[in-house]
Image (tube, rainbow, N blue to C red; front, side, top):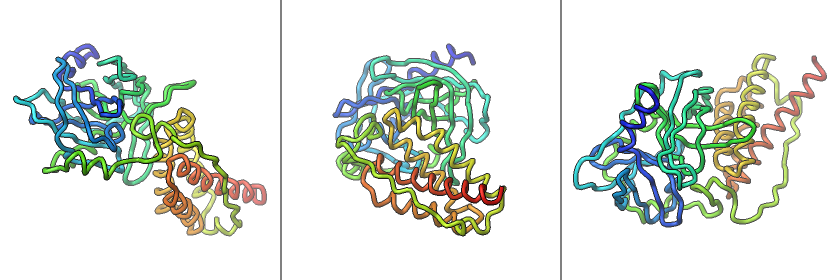
Length: 326
C-alpha cells in the first residue's frame, strides 16, 4: 500500500487522546468493542480521559483495561454504541533495519492526523524484556501512542519517545507487546488507575518532560579497582563498551530534549541486560549497584544520572586497564 492508501484506510481507527490536565496524545482502536491502545505515559495519573474520533465524536474512558509498565503501553476502554473501525497488528518480530514505515499522530496536540514516513533505522535490543524500534519517520509531542505501519497497512509499532536534533531520533515499541494485553478483561476504574500511576515529580507529556522542582545533580561516579574486570576478556569488555555507548547515544539526546524518563528507560534496559549477562562478576555487580542506587531515587532525572554514573565508572576502569595492557 502507498502511504496515501494507508492513511485513507486507517484514519477512522486512529483517535486523539485527551486528559483532564491538558495532555494530548494519540491512540488507535484494536477491538471493535472500544479497546484503544496508547502509551501509558500519555494517560498516567489521569482521572479523566477522553477519546475523540475522526468524525469529532468524543467518548469518556470508563476504565483502563490493561497496562504494561515496562513497555509504556496502556489499553483504555470506551463503550461506543456500535462497533468502531480497528487497525490490524502485524508481526513486529520480522521487521528489520531498512524497512519502510508510516507514522500517523497528533503532533503538538493541534496538528491532527499528521502523516510522516521513513525507515526503521535500527532494532535495538535493550534487554531480554525490551526491544525498541529506532525510526527515521519524524514525530513530535502529541504523537505518542500513535500507530507505526508497515507497507501492508499493519501496525508494527507504537510511537513512544522522540528527539529531533541534528538528526531524527525517534523510537517505537514493537506491536507484539500489545498482544498479551488484548487478553486482559475487567480492568480498573480511572480513580484506581490514577492513584497507581501518578508521577509526583515529573511533568510534560506523560511525565517525561522534566522536573517540576529544580534538582541539583551531584555526580557519584564509582572508582573501581582493576580487579572488577577479572574474568572478562577483551571481547567481553568490547561488548560492554558497545552496549554502554549505544545506550548513551540513544538516551542522552532524549535527556537533553527534556524527556528524562525515556532516557532513563533506555539506560535501565542496558544496565539490566549486563547485570544478567556480563561475563565477569565484578561488572555484573557494578551494573547492579547502579540499578539499586537508581531505585532509591525519586525523579527520572536523578535515576538517569545514577545509571550514567555507573556507566562512566565502568568506562573509566576499562580505559585504565587498556592503558596498562594495550
